[in-house]
Length: 139
Image 1 (cartoon, helix red, strand yellow):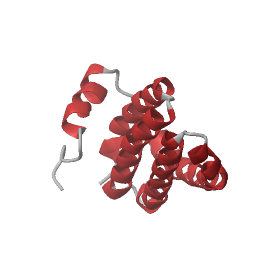
Image 2 (tube, one colour):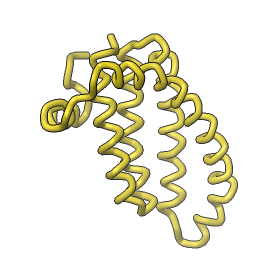
Image 3 (spheres, one colour):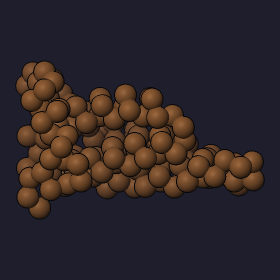
Image 4 (cartoon, helix red, strand yellow):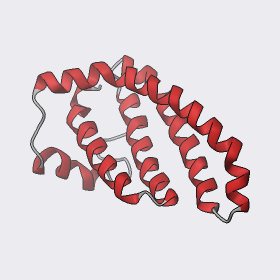
């Protein structure tokens, strides 16, 4: 896959690499080192949270909150993408970075479905900034 071939990557890359201040190299290195650990923690808590969400989602469906149920589906997709990213993050492979990129896109849809779009946009901004700053560290 060629550079800037992921959905919205061509549009987002200049914003997060040219228009915002760059991270110092030591911060980039730290982010790369802790990324797989944070992904593991996210998967563990995601499994716990999604498990409870799925357990209670039938009640959400009956209460008229269909978007909550759909949000759980997107949460599961994010969980799977984060889990798939872990080996690539440990080995600093571009595949791990791409899974995290896709998880970030799905995260935006999740927040739109659950009505938490302001926090979702803030989180997406921070997440994409970090992702694009450390992309050069993955091969």
